[in-house]
Image (tube, rainbow, N blue to C red):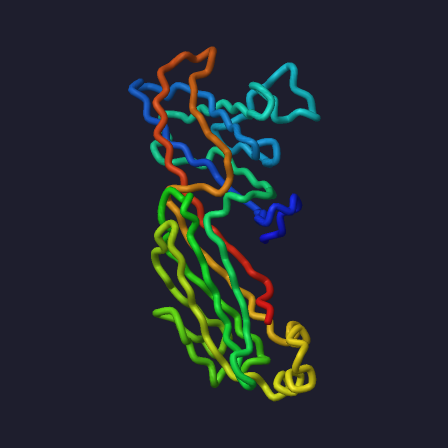
Length: 269
């Protein structure tokens, strides 16, 4: 959910609900066992995260920790340390941890702008423009835009006016554009038009200088889904290091990805 920047600098913040998981696959040259290691979770968002350890993972105890400072356990403030001990018999990836948080951030991977506009007396155009931020390290894939069309627009008159591969489902009253790949820094625009129902036309005629009178009549929720195999939305940093009491040489190979579901609840006129 995008909200205005409370500092009034002309930018915007986004209220984001994040649910994540950490998978681990351990390979050790020791033929009998895998050496346990420490997983550090850090970053400005770390104190806001609710962290749940799963199999083979446990929070490191800290004698100085208190219930009021859960994010100083096993390390410095703002950092969580966990002991990961995956047995040799587990040769597949295992979910060792999950986390959730609600945060404000300016580092959203894309900007979504949606608008419904009266293009002539009897018709309305719904447009959605999406830009992949230039700061993204990679492209957005599996990119899909879904727009719900209200009953105040005539479904049998709907025409897709922009965007290849747009499909109109008259039963569900949704338009789906499967964009595929959106390179970072680039944008796409999709749109559709449909005639207004007679009740909406009457409202428009009765309030010719008050387009806001239609705001409650024409609402087109927008849903955007995408996948990235390079970037991340949160700023959590995961680092694998040796445990003090189990010295070992740890080499970390890390992959990160996210799936994004972005909702625009109302498209105003």
